[in-house]
Every structure is written in structure tokens, then in C-alpha cells.
Length: 398
Image (cartoon, rainbow, N blue to C red; front, side, top):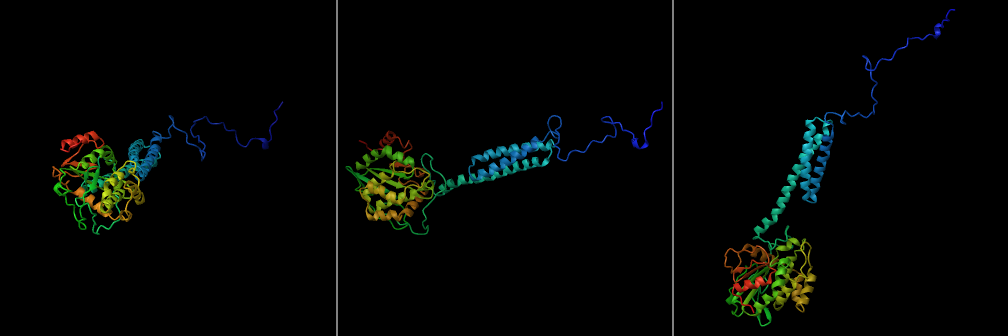
């Protein structure tokens, strides 16, 4: 039997092609999908050494730069953080370039931002260092203003006064301080005429003070904003009143103004010293009570805030002295003696302490108590130590 033949039209036009073996010569791989994700090389990297270092360098470098720039406006402490991050970014960037990690751009960005961070940190540090030394330089120019215990810092804020105007002196301030003498239970202000405008203090020997019976001199330098001055006053007020009331000791009080710089622009020290000058000038018998009231820890404002306004100062003094007269009130309201208080402060810090045994003794802080020419260097809040010091200097105590 013959096998039936297929019609020509039904025969396949081309012979079937056997599939080639995988990897055979001439095999063409299909083109990659245009959005395909690159497959990681063995070990999880996409190239030589991966790209972890180059990405990390960019991230750390940008964080370092941002941290340092922000620190320039808010807190210098974060400059240190920025520097550490900047150094880390530089190290990561160098590693990424050595390993030739792809893409190169992030590693270069990290390296550049790390270097820029160090430059910004140097600039910020220079400004911070300059700011720290400016107050010290200013104090040196003014005679080394400072205060006992080191509290208080920053730029000085002063009253808006005309520096070319003549400085008007109050009465009863001729020595550069308010001089007090006692008799029985009373402490009175030693009278002296107001010097000519823009005069200089004229230190006076004890023989010219009061009736000449005093044999001891205590000079006390204070700033009514100084917390250590308030502690000294609290610990030693009874002792000071005792020796002054005995009639054998003159106490010279020198109010200073250098702590204006911690009053947020309110120049509180200048206003309070000016207020004391107003009392000494127009109501001198009330000066001692005024001093003790303004130095009271319950009234003294904390540093870093503006402090009391003039109305509050008047109210405090009015209660302390059983009534201020109109002249004193007007004097405080108009800040009549604020320029004098500031000029006196400058003179004190620029000149040696009058009557000191050491001719080069300067006021470098407050409180400073100089007894018969010898400065007290003990704890200002230690009352027994101060009494012992007075006795060492020949001041008789009950």
C-alpha cells in the first residue's frame, strides 16, 4: 500500500529549527527591560566596593554643614558636632574615591561639604573668640572692671547720654564716695560741697572728715547688681554699723556701674547708683538707710533681666527712708546723676585705690573692702572672718 502524499500547499515552508543550546556561539540575549532594576553583584554591591561610602559621605557631609551653619546663629556648642561630622564626611569621601565607587558625585559632594564645614567652623570659632575677648579688652581699657566671684559677663549697655556734655557732680560726694560717720546710734553723711562739673574725686585725709575724731577708714566698693555684694552686706552690716556708730571709723561707700552689661540694656547699675547720688545730694541724712534698702537681697534683681524701673526704685527708697522729698524723686525720674555714676565708675577702675598701702592696688571686682589701706581678701559672706580682719587692722569692736 502506498503512503498518501501531502499536498504541496500543506507542506511547511521552512524546515523546523532546533533550539540552540544555552550559551551556544551566536546566541543573542534579549535586550534588558528599560525599567529593570540592576541586579546586585555577588556580595550585595552594584560595583567595585559598592556605593555605601559615597552615599554616606554625601549624607554626613551635608549634615555637618547644616549643623555648623545653624550653630553659628544659635549655639556654639553644636560647632563641635559639626566639625566631627565634617571630618567623618571627608574620611568617607576619600574612601569612596579610592575605591572608585559609582556614582562619584555623592562622594565628591561629601568631601567638599566636609571641607567647607571645617572652614565655617573656623570662621564661627574666630567670631566667638573675638566676642569673648572684647569685654575683657573693654574692661582693661576702663581699668579692669570685674566682680568678685566672676559672675556677670557680656557686652556693656549704658544710658543714652551725651559723652561731650559736662558731668554734673552731686553734693556730699567729693571724695568719690559717700562718707559716713556715726554718733551713738545714728549714722550720718559727712557733708561736702558739690565739685565743679567734670571734676575729679579729691581723696581727703581723715583729719578733714567730720570733727576729726575718726582714726579708721573703711572703703567699700559695690555694684548694687552684684550678688556677692549683697552677701557681703547681709553678713557684715551689723559689724559695719557697730564700728561706724562708735565714731572711730569713717566708711566711704563707692557705688559702681559696671554690671550694666547684665541688665539687658536697662543700665540698672547706672540708674541705681545715680539714685544713691540723688539721695546723697538732696536728702543726705537718709543715705545710709537708702543704701541698705537697695542692697537688700529681697530687692536686688537677678542678673540677666532688666531690673527695677525708676518708679520701683523710688517706691523702695520711699518706704526705706520714711518718705523721699520731691527733689530726690525728680532727680531719680530724670536720671540726673546717671552720667556722673558712669564717669565715677570709669575713674575708679582707671586709678589706684586712694589711701591703699599698696600704691598699685586697683579695683578689679566687687565687693572690695579696704580697711586702713589693706584689702580684705576673704570670703565676703563670712562675717566672723571679716570681724577678725577688722581687728587685725586696728579697728576696735565691742
